[in-house]
Length: 63
Image 1 (cartoon, rainbow, N blue to C red):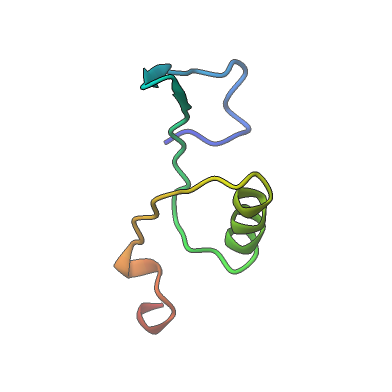
Image 2 (cartoon, rainbow, N blue to C red):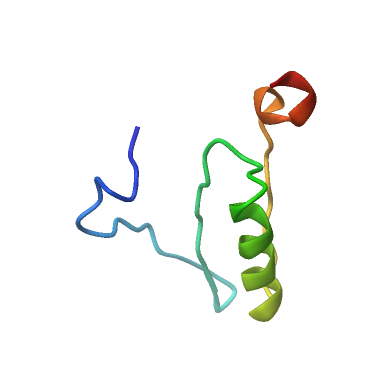
């Protein structure tokens, strides 16, 4: 497992499809009631899209 505290250098895989730039990010252990709204706001601000794959064990009913 890697946290932001463990990362000293950004790792990236750059892909270009049809002249558009792509970035792939992962956010583990979500959705998070504190972080997820901020991420959604940032995505909206930059008019970009994202795909979220939620974990069933992180849903409120299963906690």
